[in-house]
Image (cartoon, rainbow, N blue to C red; front, side, top):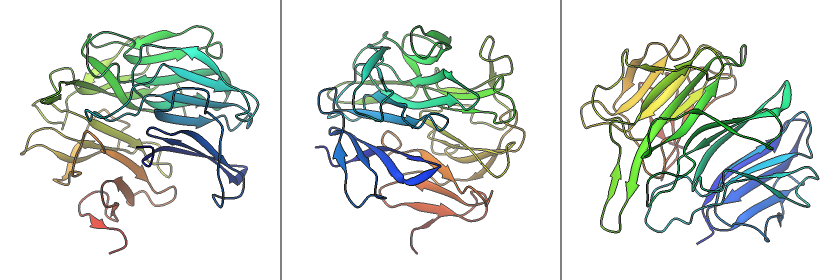
Length: 298
């Protein structure tokens, strides 16, 4: 049950330090580049959705609990945790009814500012769902993107040149024993240019029907480039790309993961803007900006 790895974070100044989260097995830490791991979260919720290391303060680690998938087997979380002693001890910082957390971002210029994407409870509406911000290291939280009681936030991209600019994907879903309602009118892509005070739903070049789960990833080598993988319907599903930080989009291909409720996460190459990896049952890669995809290592 704990075998799936749901999140990986490493320390830029020392790549030998790796922290991973397991779907049902807590948080594990390695200081020898993955040769061995030690559990550091055994006294807390074991379902992990997201991990983020504060690169400016390497002893500070944030963990979002609740695996960010929608299977009927998935365990839920009880909010976000923070460690300031490299994982030796942890404090629950709130959002206890978020259910499933899919992304955490720490402002590289201000460690007290943290964004958290919460998908919300899987089996019911309401709860702590949306995009949340703290400006005081987790003491208090503000929901800066709130769609409705059925819709949370899956992923987001912060402009590395200007943290006022954010692009986020909302995700409407609801699990029942007999079916997953995976997508609805609440799913979409939204952009803010005033640090989350106001948002505009983006439509230019995007699917017109319910979009389902939308994975977002900014290209480190080109700050204007954002990739999206959009579940949508049979005709409109696929990989999309924006060259103006999310205002306009172009469909690149029909490629879709084997099960969007589990996957739909993209990882752009840090140096090559056209190389992007897709998390899937079999890892896929594109070398031409999303036009064609092949299994790795084919």
